[in-house]
Image (tube, rainbow, N blue to C red; front, side):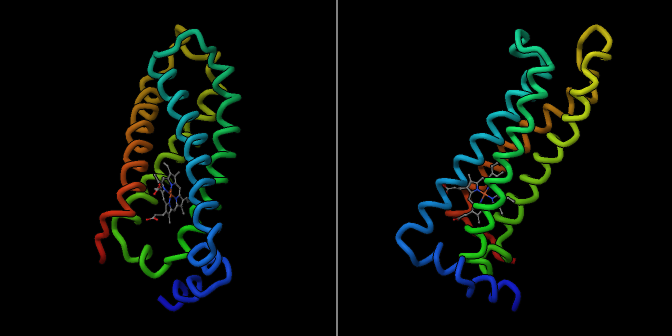
Length: 159
Ligand code: HEM
């Protein structure tokens, strides 16, 4: 806990918590990063599940590096939001669940990226069932991450 208390006492945490521009800046960046990461990942997932079949798989490959930029923005801004109230978030199950879901969602994107590079070898030009399953799970993880992220502001479950 001493570590989280130290984070919460940092200059960055004080800026986010106390200044008039700190919190609005980081929460806005968080929303932008989320829109980029989740928006692009869900397009990729839906395409792998058979939607938007006019989009070639090679085009999807180009979307994922941009999605990772969104994830970087999200991680940096999320860390700023976290340090502002680190001792509270560190013991809040809703927040912990959201972080686990975020990393699970990111893991699905990390698995799909090299799979997409092999798209030209897929029999019949269709993704194998394993790839489709990961795409479907990815959508569920992302949606649950958004819901738990939003609920973190309203429902705290302290451990
Ligand atoms: C490692 C990366 C991330 C960290 C450390 C992080 C951390 C945080 C923190 C501390 C908050 C503030 C909660 C509050 O004020 O009560 C927050 C808000 C939120 N986060 Fe994240 N987050 C990360 C990534 C993501 C991702 C990838 C998503 C989307 C799937 C996401 C969705 C949200 C949502 C929807 C909110 C609520 C925003 C609002 O109140 O308007 N976060 N995040």
